[in-house]
Image (cartoon, rainbow, N blue to C red; front, side, top):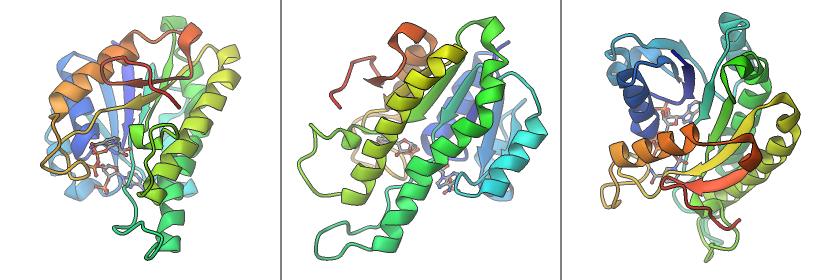
Length: 228
Ligand SMILES: NC(=O)c1ccc[n+]([C@@H]2O[C@H](COP(=O)([O-])OP(=O)(O)OC[C@H]3O[C@@H](n4cnc5c(N)ncnc54)[C@H](OP(=O)(O)O)[C@@H]3O)[C@@H](O)[C@H]2O)c1
């Protein structure tokens, strides 16, 4: 069976990715910053777990050492934060804004660089896929102002992912920028219209149907193309 690696899987959308891929019989490698407290994840039968903080170079390199040259058919860079509570002109916390970039933009890039060899190693099974979980809030054309830390970190992720898509075509790796919709999680809150199972089932279809020809696309959970 194919292998998926999900970064940031102890709750929310990452946890649902892990549940659904396992239920489909995939080999699932999942990560959490703090494994002892990742109770929901640890109770999933058959899952392979590692500790990972995407902002820490040593954490990423120790994961890579552990994985060795194992092929990864799909890598999902899901870990993300909203950033400081108040992101207004009047009250921006600049240190927290920088940390938002560390997690949402530099983290996925660091992970992509570290796991590229594992993705390439899966090319004989079909097109390996590198999926970045971004947000519609990273769309410049959609922005109505506000939420500057989160929006800018995801807009930057979009640019990084679009660039990587061009670069990694020669390696046969497809890159996707995926918006899950507004979903009920700790981040999305209780008023979100979507529940995680629907969002993730849609995103899994989008990942499954991705091709090298459409690498670098910015898509929502229904496969709809979004404006940058
Ligand atoms: N929910 C929505 O409506 C929505 C909409 C658009 C996009 N998204 C995106 O979807 C992704 C998942 O969001 P969610 O709603 O599931 O959020 P969530 O419930 O807040 O979960 C975020 C996940 O990211 C992990 N994480 C945070 N910082 C990390 C780090 N430095 N290293 C590794 N993992 C880290 C968290 O781990 P800890 O528990 O250790 O903090 C947690 O597993 C995010 O990228 C988010 O921006 C969500």
